Length: 141
Image (cartoon, rainbow, N blue to C red):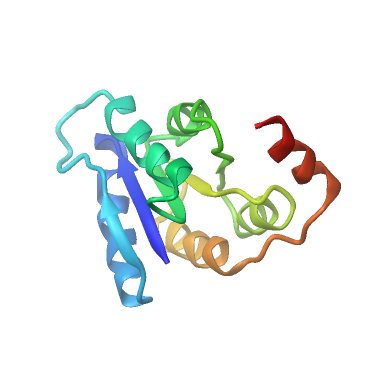
């Protein structure tokens, strides 16, 4: 799977570890930055990553920040994106099963890195269960 990944400075460390995990699982990763922990304006990195998913250039995306909230907001402003902020294995699974989330947001300051990596694994392997609600969401898009 081709996966877009982007972060601000507060999500940079987890982004680098998630990239290593994704590569070890055989995924192709497109990194939209940032490239250090130096302070940046997160929409400059998050929006291009979300746009790559919306355009079909990448199949899914992962965005990271301190809380993940701002990143989810920016990603969800892109037409065709269904970004879910996840902080547990259940929220990751439900975001795929029930919402067909195509972008995952994680907050580096909110959960341990081991949990973040497991969330990514669950999110990548959980299929969409289908349902009328998501069909309606896609219709509105």
